[in-house]
Amino acid sequence: MSSSTSVREFAVEQDFTLDEDGILARLPWRRAAERPQHTSFERFENGQWLPVTAERFLAEVKATAKGLLASGVGAGDRVALMANTRYEWILLDASVWAVGGATVPIYPSSSPSQVEWIVQDSGALILLVEDAIARDNLSGADLADADIMVIDDGATGVLRRRGVDVPDDAIEARLDGLTLDSPASIIYTSGTTGRPKGCVITHRNLLAEARGVLAHPIGESVAGSGKRTLMFLPLAHVLARAVTYAAYEGRATIGFWGDFKTIVDKFGSFRPDMILCVPRVLEKVHGGVRAKALAGGPVKAEIFRRAERVAIEWSKCQGNSGLDDATKPSVRLRAEHRLFDKLVYSKVREAMGGRCSVAITGGGALGETLTHFYRGIGVPAYEGYGLTETCAAITVNGPGVQRIGTVGRPVAGNAVRIAENGEIELRGPVVFEQYWQNSDATRDAFHDGWFKTGDLGELDADGYLRITGRAKEIIVTAGGKNVAPGPLEEQLRSHQVIGHAMLVGEGRPFVSALIALDPEGVADWASANGKQVGPDLASDDQLRAEIQVAVDEASAAVSKAEGIRKFVVLPDDFTEETGELTATMKIKRHVVEQKYAEQIESIYRE
Image 1 (cartoon, helix red, strand yellow):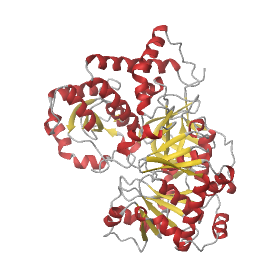
Image 2 (tube, helix red, strand yellow):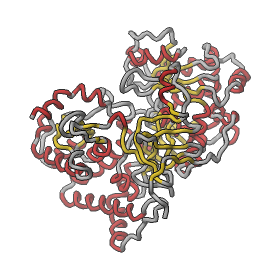
Image 3 (cartoon, helix red, strand yellow):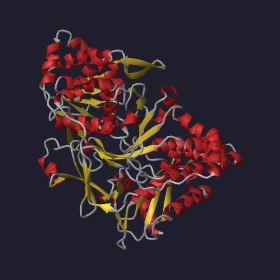
Image 4 (cartoon, helix red, strand yellow):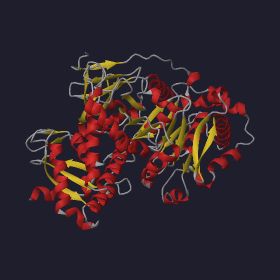
């Protein structure tokens, strides 16, 4: 049995090579040479998924890259890309690399002032936007003479026509000029406070991430001919982009869908083997099946509740990697698991497309209960950890190397250490080296060559990292109690009627919570309880009693001083559109605190 005692530092040796010939900018050429008719990507058009072969993708990359050359994009120049997740995103990204340029991703939800800052700061020569609406929204922004092109108006076709007279060897010359240390992308941080900083991601970073993921046990879930993954997280975020290239490097087939709200419908038509998602997606799938069961009457509701308990118990019997804590399921448990697999678990798997065997989550914690639930139904959810500055995952769980409650071990070639103050520090080939044109921020980000994450954590002796909080989010009450809000918020969010929860209490006598209702969950709850959905529902005594139970259950896991004393129910959920969430579904705490300042004050006036 391996020790679970804590250590200060842990590293995993690099067992793969990084070289100029392997850079991802050359990947379209390699894939087309190996298997020209292999379906590398699928795009959704006119109600169906259409294949894009390796050969066709290379042809489109070359033609688009020639257009960029003809448009004056030189080696090291920047091209900004502001669009939802779609096939053209990766096509344009690969084309920018093919001319030696660097892509500057911008979230479609960005405000004109944010776009103005990113385009000006990066010096982007071209800004590619999704549609005419996005272009018109930027009419008042000072974009420093950047050429604005609209994807839905045929931007890629325009580029191909511009480059029709550019010879192939012009592209080869640009590729030959790339090194591992050439910038591949400048990715601006989400900017929840202050102006976003541009993280310079090199070809070394991206290649190390792709090969590190493929060398990790999680790689068998990402890669392989015949494997299918549906990418729907924003490609402007490094996680979705890095995993897309890892899957492409691993010869899988990748589909793209840009509407986060309708993704569950697309699971059924695409039928992915692996889903990369934020925890909210898995919470929604679980919540949707649960809501249908509860709406079906007391018998179906009890069946689902029992099925949940059995799935969690089944998962716990499997134990954690290296801890020798697995137990043999009882005869009763095996029989119940078989029964509920037919009655309940198969329906959850069908909601995920019917053939999904694994989910990889990032951008927040899923919570141990749901992690056990998904493993118990046969779709293990593996949590990882990373930041923009680490080019996505630097630690991750995987098949045979999973400890629930942790975010896994380091990806090969990388190291994690815990500073004296508990802060997580990182080093390795996936870690960036600088912020764009910001030497002060770069200097402040490192300590003795280690990147300071701002997150707090613990390492066990086998290298598994546990996130215990974020230094900037720690709530210090008036009594001096330090409270990490994340775990309590995660548990609350798993309840059917709760969309998001945010703890408050900095400098206050006790901890309270803002509870934002989930529209779908509340509608299902109201239907099952004979209530009308409307503004008054937030003050309904029965609903508040339901939420109080969830609050009490979450608070039971911590000390009295850390528990939630009071809460306010908000009638609407937090969304990206209304400004409370980032594009990766993280709460913008300062925005919420300002927006609901009166509600917060009312808690402490009583």
